[in-house]
Image: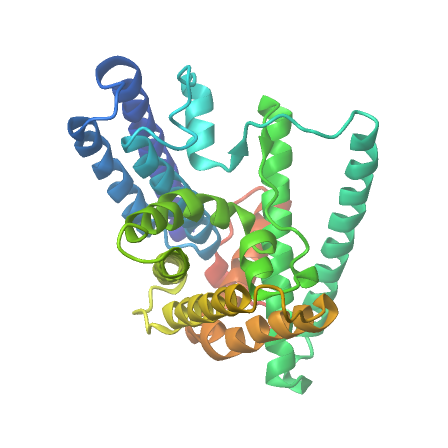
Length: 357
């Protein structure tokens, strides 16, 4: 009980600190240093650094990992862009404080919807059916886990791939619905049916976790491409920028994984992203070299790319996640939350036995 109360208190302190820092950033822009200068950058970069480590004060997997994504990744990278007068926070005219805070921590998009009003209800119905289907499949996975001792390890890891995908999408969709209801703002779509990818480039650039892609593109890819383009050919500048983007993504995933299990990083997760960055660089280079002279049909290249992502995740991505029984802890925390809501009193995850693992 004391553990849960302490974790909730830490959660409130962490997010109160984030709110205070963002108020400071807003004041810097609106009142003190509205134009990009070295002084402005030096005033704001420490906030981004603080956001990187702030979620480490949380030990709950669900609260810690979620906060790490929204604070250590989205907010810190947006503040870095903001420090140099770029990114969604550096809008003109300046955002009001409430919008500034939301845009900093959430993947808010400002562009107006291009669909006509007549097409929106159809799209909403299609999305609702899609999300309901994924929720049902997620519930089925929980039933499957009861028989995991009879399931081959690789098949179980494939279930984990689906589990992570469904959980991330449903969580972000729920956050998007809450933001839309409370503010009228729209969030960026988190995924674009990654199983339909036609290549690694399509998977990582246009299908999988678009929120991360959209924040890494202006903070890492574009600056590295611009800088290396001055000394390298355009082809090699692109490949270098791709590798840098995947390295940064790997480092940030290592940070999130450390927040989940507090186990010393083994480098496997970083290796996963370095491997995919290298393979994606090769794919881009081969496409430019062939110049359309040879084309592999999407129904062949797509499944090969998705299978490659899944198989390499078995090898490098999941072992660190499972090393500290993170799957069991996630389940116990979720069931403790359900019991807390049911009985209107705090229930510690340490007192919960997860029946699925």
